[in-house]
Image 1 (spheres, rainbow, N blue to C red):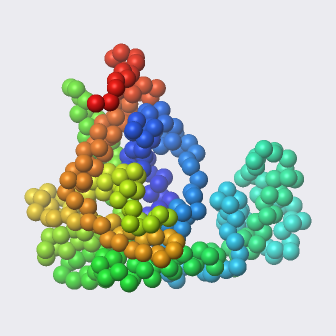
Image 2: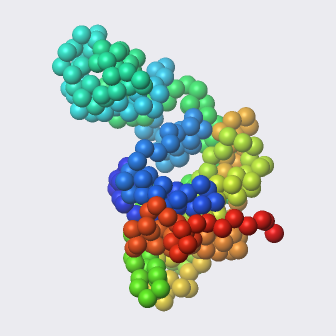
Image 3: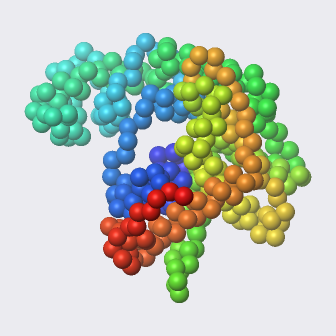
Length: 338
């Protein structure tokens, strides 16, 4: 299953919890709009794009091709990629005056920016001709500009120089039944009790890397994080982005996964270690390894399950325009901080 397939599965995930968490500006209606109804999300920032490239490069550097071609804006790039994958390849010199290709391209884009004029929209597409030609020549490889290559290779070199990071990310030996899995998608059901009834919710998690050592009965979760800030202040990012909730949710997923593999009794004997490997995407590309404490994992799991309960409540009662606290009174109480 590809990452795209994973995101297409309708299930509760850590990232979707942010849309229902009131402390992050979430509401039941936001969850329904952006998760259930698949409304438009936020575009990736350059920092997020670099992070995704680093993840992919760690997995398989051979799929990258360095080119002088600059990848267009995300919207234009997606449009060009869609046309490239659904229209026969033609020479760059023939694109501008190819009426069939114009009609095909416009079938995917009725409006671009503020204009609905087909000729002006086609002019926008033509800005991506170089990228289209690159896609025709690259045979499925990922386009890296020279500047992106510098960032990605700087990060990977730093990761390999850090002894523990290198061991966690690259050096697991699959002996005696051991397993190492990258980009592993896990799926399970959570049953939430609501007064005298209960509701089951489909759940999912996409783990960067997990290793299983059945001899020591240790599962190790390794999550790779890139940051545009100095790695020395990563602790603040950890709290702000609620990575503790993500790690707690992932650990819960692993517990279910181990139960399915070995049975619940044996799975209860396993230890689950959780690490974040952080690397800067600028400057010195410094790398640090962080082990997540039991107290943080418990805090994260408790927060996650509280949000799962909110989703279950809205799902069961169909109350997407009100949160739990409003249901009985119709209002929310504001109190001064302690």
